Amino acid sequence: MKASFTYWQDNGHWLGYLDEFPDYLTQGESFEDLKEHLADLHRDLSADVIPAVRRHAELDLAA
Image 1 (tube, rainbow, N blue to C red):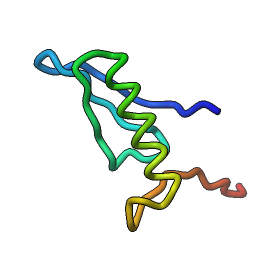
Image 2: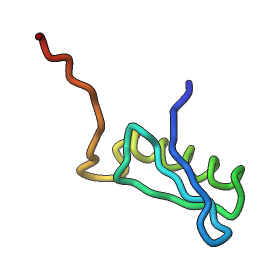
Image 3: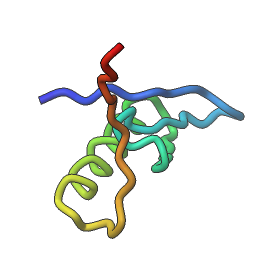
Image 4: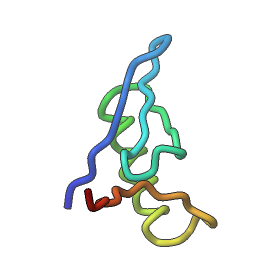
């Protein structure tokens, strides 16, 4: 299983969020640490550990 994510560096920290869950930002001390935090976050979000999760989706609109 794979999940896409967006990340950047700011003041020596790695910040990012899962593209499916853009409201849930996390950080790490390195790129590898950030990926571990994102994996943990994905597990919590997928297991309904975090209440009232906002999700991102696409809607097909007929022309």
